[in-house]
Length: 442
Ligand SMILES: *[C@@H]1O[C@H](CO)[C@@H](O)[C@H](O)[C@H]1NC(C)=O
Ligand SMILES: *[C@@H]1O[C@H](CO)[C@@H](O)[C@H](O)[C@H]1NC(C)=O
Ligand SMILES: *[C@@H]1O[C@H](CO)[C@@H](O)[C@H](O)[C@H]1NC(C)=O
Ligand SMILES: *[C@@H]1O[C@H](CO)[C@@H](O)[C@H](O)[C@H]1NC(C)=O
Image 1 (cartoon, rainbow, N blue to C red):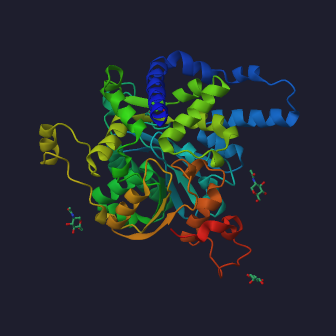
Image 2 (tube, rainbow, N blue to C red):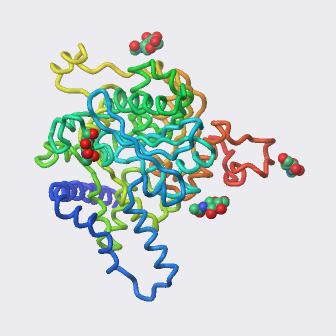
Image 3 (cartoon, protein in one colour):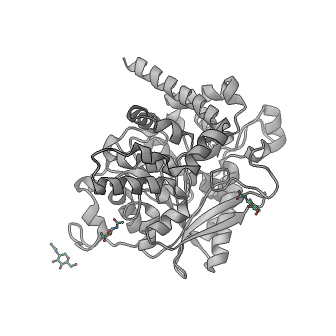
């Protein structure tokens, strides 16, 4: 039975990947139809719907269609859009919740995500708003290739050359460009930084390959850092994706996962449930923290597009068990790196004080891998295993109780809330929201 389930989930994912690609290549029709006609969904209107239900549904619909800056403005925060050009010509979009004169804080999203990841759950839940409430000047990055950063001074985003990058380039070009831009526009000398998943991977690449950037960051909050991945090897979906890359369709793919799910997953209740299960299959299953009402909003913003090479590079880390630059043929490696296999990134060169948040049901980022990485960092300041067994890779952004489970801790690490004596501190958000079992150490 287990084997069958595994088999069917792999087939499901393979089908999804292939259908995605078909949808992708026919973007012109499907996606544009969806995007140019948001009122289409009016027809779904449920009979016997109360005015409140109708308003809630319209609100969800609106949140799933608005671009990040409009979404931020909708909730009453001052939103800005900035464009940053990297040394190698990629034009990145940054979103900002402006607080002039306050300490700038850069948030960097994970694989197939965008700046939206930090806002879609709305004020009082999503991290960007929380940091804004705590008086930070919040900047949201978008890595090259996602829907907000699909532009270049010379290269055509629809051409093959544009997509020849991985998170290595995001680390050595995008993050430095965004950090310098933020420092220049605010006049500050250093930023605060938080990353989710690939937002950590790229950060560590930057700090190890361009160590001068260590000085520009006060502290790194690393959520679900996908860096070491020896425990991920048996992940059935990763195998399926690997298989897909070796197939006829998959081998020529350069760009992936930009909004296609939106069309597929919302056809019926059942496809929606299957899609959520497919996501859980990748990131870890946790229905309890998943707000199904918000799934249309998630689908409106996620996945936001990546280069196939980014995914392939992660697969290499998993397969070879080494955190190293992209590996080509032995000859090309020799030419590029002067060795037959690429030399590892040296994590001891990451001297930014780093605090790590990780969880036991994160299928992409196993606790023992995170702990191994933690030991290798140049300046580790603490690690926090989320006190909920089922907490998964995406719960760091999507969980209903993410604020009390993760962000309250982060605010404390940042010195924004102080623990008075244990068992007291009625005023602190931390203690109000953190569940009883928080202090159960593992
Ligand atoms: C956020 O919480 C505050 C107080 O806890 C409340 O006044 C406000 O309405 C909430 N905002 C949203 C959008 O729910
Ligand atoms: C891409 O960047 C160029 C140069 O800055 C700009 O003129 C153009 O409008 C941008 N295209 C998109 C789709 O954002
Ligand atoms: C990594 O960097 C540290 C600090 O500079 C150095 O001592 C060490 O030899 C380096 N390790 C490798 C494998 O290059
Ligand atoms: C908790 O601290 C507040 C002031 O910070 C104090 O008024 C209150 O009596 C304390 N409660 C307990 C149970 O210690």
